[in-house]
Image (cartoon, rainbow, N blue to C red; front, side):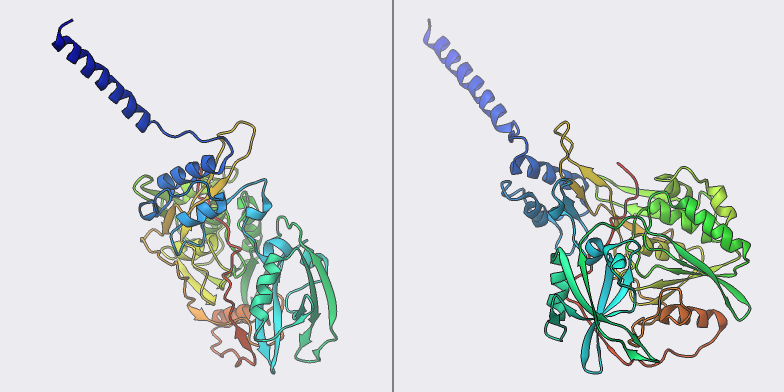
Length: 451
């Protein structure tokens, strides 16, 4: 064999080995099923594809980390809405007082003493079933007397606990404070909530009042029935109480919007979704937003339930979030929306659940990502710091807190005064509201449609 032939064979073998080596370098690494690396590699790829802020994500980093921790390090700094959970690991789900015990509270100082105020109690919840109700005042939490130095840490301890001992009192302007009593709670589940509504006659004006705790999938039929009844009673004003509504299903919120908005057509633009470069932008009409998750009730049936109104009053606060804020923002191009209360929570984002179903017969992690920024038909949005009310008012003015729907209740009373033209101001507060450093977390992911 000639020397030149040997050289050609050598270079051929060398080149072949080089190609094989390059192919091995480009071959993706395979991770053991169920390992942290296996899960975290999937998390990273999904976020790179769908996450609104995918371009500012850090590099892949250490895939051996705990998956909850790994997910957290990929999030945009001010993104408090995206989360990851594993269906078989309850501790991975977001925790809140409402989800554990079924109530919400705030804190006040009155006459030099400190109290937790029960603001909202869910129906058939551990809280409701053990005697808690709106307006009760908490004096002790797990044996600790409330004071200025400890109330915030005690609030955090409730979120972290699985059982709770409270000492409570009641207060009325006529009789003052009642004797204290103790209530013990175990964390538990709370299911679907009723929608409370009624007609209030205010100086010959019939006002419909609806308190909506959540926007559930399939509520279109219920909203239809409620508004048909209110329409049959000839209401000319409508008050929506959304102050403790943390969001829910977009098609449900759309169904209510179709009923209350005057003179809309099915093809009128209702919502604009803006995603990253992979997802692009999606515009949905009222009809499309309704049909994204609701097919049993037609647009025409909902429109026919429209009462004789051309504006709505929305009672709101820092628990008003997600789908509730969507109603406020996205009805503005079509009618007057008069908000009363405090600034809303500020969730102008939506997404859809992304489930790791790679292992047959086994449930994997589920990602609830911030995927879309939301805008109305006029491209108005960007309320990530909350929507300021048209009429500012704190529902905690006096230590006596009335039930929702009572005409003596601060925000409802202010709405009725505005309807009747009564410009009298709210009485000066006799207490001080205390801020919480813990961010309210009982906000539902706004789920527009499946991918």
